[in-house]
Length: 458
Image 1 (cartoon, one colour):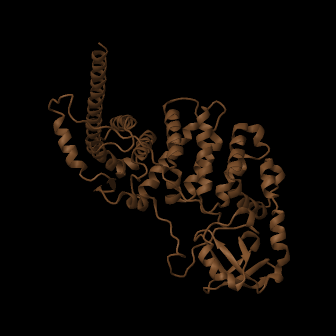
Image 2 (cartoon, helix red, strand yellow):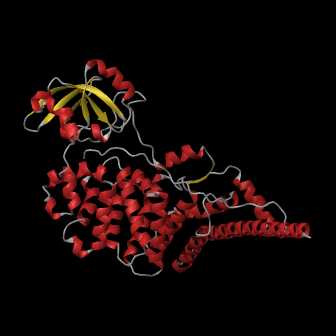
Image 3 (cartoon, one colour):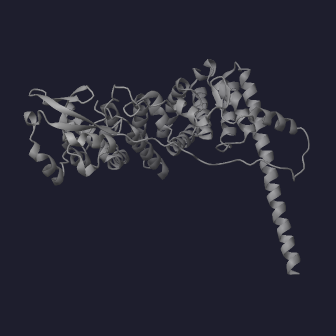
């Protein structure tokens, strides 16, 4: 009796799993067919705005149902839509509702294709500009575009898409995004809204090779003393970012206070704390015997170059009393005029040079930094260890893909996908048994990691 019950239970479980797999296969085929249909209709390029908007919104709705790294049939079915989004007639459409729909479709495609990039850098830049239009609706209390903005915010935060923006556009779009966050944040927003904004801003700061004043300013403005009463939630967001990125923000903050003659008393306490931060007692004892100004002339030192992640040896040869800067001649012949208080450097005996070149390839530990550091350009001399050049978002995607199906400006990473699509689409019109082999959707998020480098001098 027990054996019969066990067999019956196993059979029911098998049938249930089989039905689920069959349902998944039907779902995949249905999504592929729907997406392919929308893409082909877009290729006809409807002249009526309402008809075009309807197709784009339908495409957006379908894309929200597609998981990351979908089957080949889905990937190939996406190609017509991906191609049409970057046509001049759609990408540069004057209607704001069309622009919003395009941006939302792009965000979903970015989510689906992560960590690969959907388009080449010039198109990515223009599409991210459209995303800024959507994010402005975060200041609304409700509505469809408000919901779209919340979803877009979540996608950018979780996939760390801001790293791509940094690669393709530098600071311009990032500054716009920061300003939107600080002006749009509301106490009645869902709790995750604050968290996603904090994640994005903090990630950008940590990943930036340099932090110019235009990037720092929106954060600094949010923690002005009067802002505490005007927008407490914005004040709280700014303070959270300063806490998260205090090590990265301290140097550019001190520089901004000096250059712009800012009164730190007008800002939150954390700003004053960071600006008044003093070297540790250990560092003061490590460097006090060296003196300053002309005392450092003829001193052998090694200077940290964050981009190269390496110390380079050289000699201090002169001191400018007016500019308060020293001239360094490196052993490889390069010359530099430096404000030593903004550099990471250490005294170096000649017998230590060879040792440092071999072993000093890790960033200097905080406890051993005698003075502040800045990010430098890569050394000009040729050689793999001294050359540093960041690759674009699209170049990194190509390296990760290792090739694939190409269709104009759109890349589909799975080879042989079209053949599979043709076979599967032909099967749509013929009946299939429930026990046939099925495809399953793979859902695995693989956000790209960025490398953190030290702050650059403007």
